[in-house]
Length: 219
Length: 219
DNA sequence: CGACCAATTGAATTGATTCAAGGTCCGTGG
DNA sequence: CCACGGACCTTGAATCAATTCAATTGGTCG
Image 1 (cartoon, rainbow over the protein chains, first blue to last red):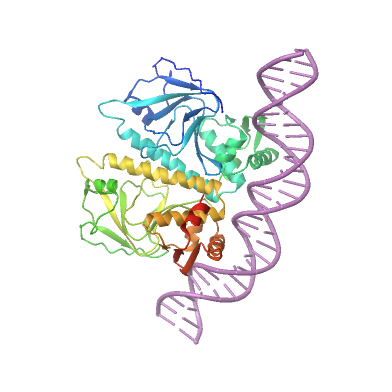
Image 2: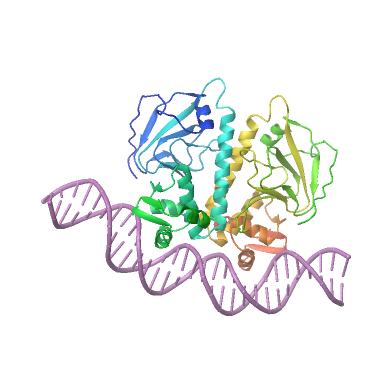
């Protein structure tokens, strides 16, 4: 485990354009300005068991939300990219833990004293819920090829891309997100490559050659 | 598909004792009284694609929340029993559909005009979220025996039982909830029976003979 | 009793995993 | 600049857990 060595920036200005998402923007209007924490890859943002509460906004980079079984198997519940909010935990205690995947910047969202985050919090919680319900279908009822295809399609959407996907996480992260082994993820990517659906210019970049085929595979 | 033939009861009195859960009780205080709808087994409560919005309270019986793949595979996201709230859907449209599992009574929760359901809605949404995140770990990282054991332990807790579990749903429902086939569910139950952890007095009743062993198996 | 649906059980198959061996990439230091 | 080390990724072969297909049993209701 790396030592946690975050530089705290005192700048409170939001990102130049701000998050693209209307609900997130509206939510930010109800927060007190807060500094951005910088994380190197694989640092803990909050731990399992910690008393939680606040929400976080990803400024840049990638964050993963994980849970462990007693014997150490890991399930990644979700990845979060720039402009996305994470940190929803019921009750006082974190049942998941959050880590940076790559170099990531995270802003704490402190509600205004007067009115809290209001209805926006519910809206974003429901969106998170819906996203996770999609993932139940994937984990419970899809085979390896469908899982990987669905993952790539999801990344295409969220990165506002049509052709190049940036894989900021490594194969074992993808595996733990999709309920597979990293070998299987690697094999399916090769399968997609060999069938001409994608190319792999580098280990962390996917070029989508046939988007409709990919979408079809994703179920 | 059965014809939908619900008797609408005009009684507005809450259940004799009311839900055990403090948050749910507090939420009910903010709702206008509403009738209870009765459903026979396997009736649709709301459909995929319907415009949604309201929340529902299970008065008695069991409700399942499902989602389908394009080619008809089904994933059951959750079961809901008496005293539990369901119906959380982001945006305007239901992405899941809800059905009665057995004879079930469901009360619509209409918020008061003045203040809505308030913070309770967020609290219950977060609880739903947490429950579903548990399920991600189960679907993604547990084997068949662990899944079934975890399912039984969950039912024990929720039915406030220590010994007898009532299986109101059939094997194929359990399978679609756990990401297995109904044959595998049946085989694991036999395994648990043969190893003395449970007994099966009838097809819809489980007697837990060794709770700690069951909990251990559940991971 | 007979029909029907659900559940059980068995046997064969298969998709994914496990175990093992190389290969690639990248940063560091000689 | 290139060699080395280590982390990650790929690929192959053997294994295994769960599924599929098939037959039978059990339970319920007219």
